[in-house]
Length: 204
Ligand SMILES: [Zn+2]
Image (tube, rainbow, N blue to C red; front, side):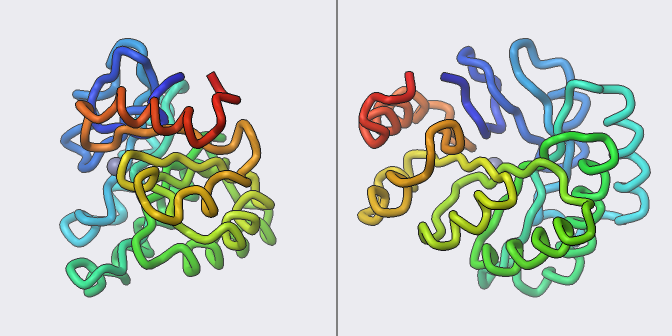
């Protein structure tokens, strides 16, 4: 099984996400990996949104096999002061993913409800791209709402080790929940083992 969200090359293959635009040239041609171009919400306040919109459009045109990300919203204590800029940037990513028909990789910290609201609004306007929620740790009730929008999810060691992992993840249908290593490539074998255990060995 491939690594559905990482920032490092993984011999298993998968999606390698940028954190800033400086990563884009580095990840663009990583063998066996799908590059994802984007700006992480942690860096939203450091960029010119119009410039990112222009660059993202250009890179997606040049790399038809690429996806969009990492983007999203982070309302944790450390980043909540930049939420306004994060929202602007999120819409740039969602718009680009929709126009270029790519999947968008979303990060959500204390922000799943707002993300759901934004995505539902896009679905209503028929401008919703394919969506992938990484490090998913919301309730099953909320997962159902994202599933209705066509979302897929990925989880890493931190999520899989959580006491609520079983109730959060066991009922997510096959083909919609996947493993990820995120920023910890050394955790990949354990992540995969735990993921298979949680899924009862159904997904191999
Ligand atoms: Zn990440």
